[in-house]
Image 1: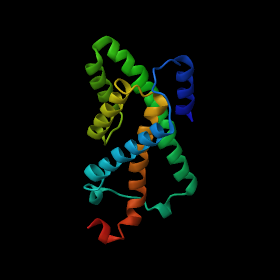
Image 2: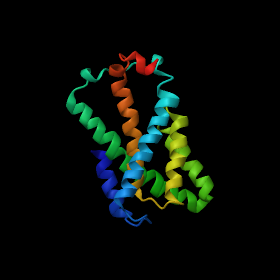
Image 3: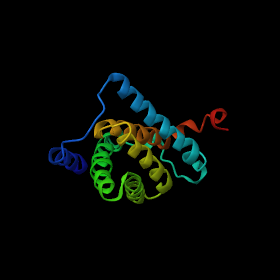
Image 4: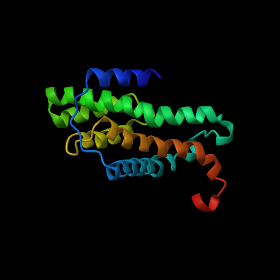
Length: 171
């Protein structure tokens, strides 16, 4: 709730942001891009580390916690992080240090707060920063990509214990 309120304050204080025109096709493409990026994480990081991970079976997660986790991780956090990190911080860093150094600095900060996923967070932040400049995606549009990444990773972590019983799929 705090992140959402902070996001609303940031939007109110800093409303201007160049943006690409919204279309249904754009929204679908952004979501697919996010889910594909999340799937790449699952294949490159999550699946190889599955034996070292302590998964919680979906049946042990109360429904309200699952829904709250989805709303927080796939909607609220991406909106807040895209506004603060890739709008405000990236604009400021790009102004003072140039676009490339700004992207690297902002991505390093983003990665530093994502403990345990520093390298993948750094790379995904670079992808999302690229969405800002050449593609002119605004906060909400980038949040769709970011939310898709989080959705794919969240579903992997939650549903893998159930899916691993189907050994023919994973071995």
